[in-house]
Image (cartoon, rainbow, N blue to C red; front, side, top):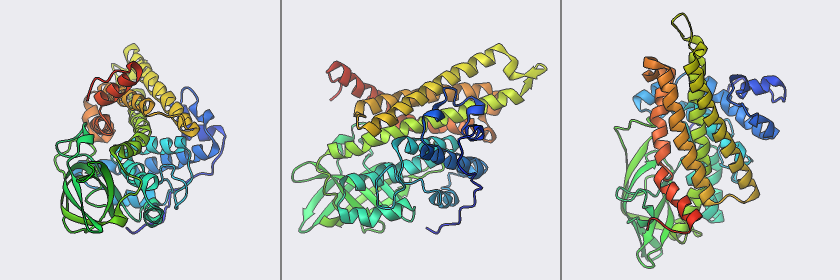
Length: 412
């Protein structure tokens, strides 16, 4: 993919009050002064991504979303920001803390859920699978160009008949001499029609364990078709995949992926990013509602002067602030190596559920204008539905946490 020179007028980092204005304190979206808890590097990632969203994404994204068209020009510009890597150390990935990575996810989702989802698949799923489970040769070959967005990745786990019960996947991997033969179907696979490498999860027909394989673009027997008719995340493409006798070499197997638990390790790491993404959607909705209420006049005065409007805005802010604290603690736990799967599950469940409520209130405050793409809220309202479901639905996350706190499993 060709790249274009990045031309955003990025101001020099500073700790002065104008920096905080850029990050949203003047709008009330940093009411608990979260920015004061961040390092200079984290603030810089946040600032760079926010300016990219404001200058490049928001002016054009509605058109891509409405046409269900992938925004290639934005991806090219994103490549120049140096934000792709999900905290992977080395291999051309920019050094970033878990919180810096979360702030990037927040800001991209504040602009558009499709961009946040693209990055989540590229870095959080495809690249992290290779980084965590791949051989040194696989890491050297794929991670540097993926970090530069010169190569696109996908993560193929979900199947048409196995969504929440993904552990029951039916795609098979059969040994044939020194090679493997893959057969099966996958569904809802982001980037799969444009990816240069696809991480495919399949069940070994001999030991019945789930293993990971790298399938390259153009492999005979690999067929990926864009899923149409989506009412959510319309500016990113998901695909339905058919694998018919796809032959891959032993060198293309992820050597550290032995069971489904290894796939689960990758997924657990991404729930942190999903919690931040939900915060991004909620932040956008709150900020839009506040701005609209200040500017919109009814009955001879601005909406913000009415008690019921202030009540709604304050309750929205309370939810956004609580989500921020969840995310900040997630980042710190990741840094300390103390983040558990169930803590990530609780954060994902809480933040996506709360984001839906905040966005719903924002749409209501905008009245009829709330359903127009011009005001962006309806796009966030549609996109949060996908965020709420993927990487484990609210119900599944609830049962995982429920099993942890009670010691009793409520599902198989």
